[in-house]
Image (tube, rainbow, N blue to C red; front, side):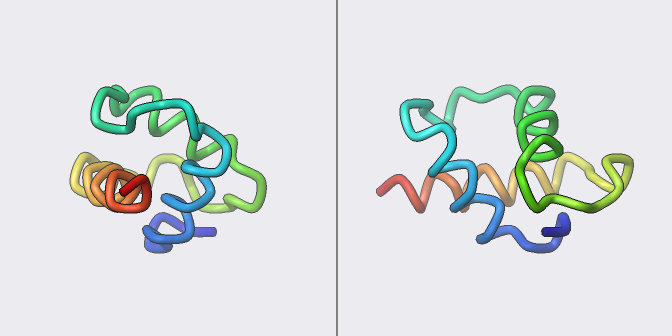
Length: 64
């Protein structure tokens, strides 16, 4: 997975952290969790707030 794989990342986060409400996850934690996902292979430095926000919003949608 790469940073551009927003939906795949959101699904993986929902599977791994199903008991976490994504609305309250800090971006620092979100970044770390994404980098630690199995199958994630992008450069951690290529992330930014816009990318993390898009992933968080998609994760929220996946929880509904």
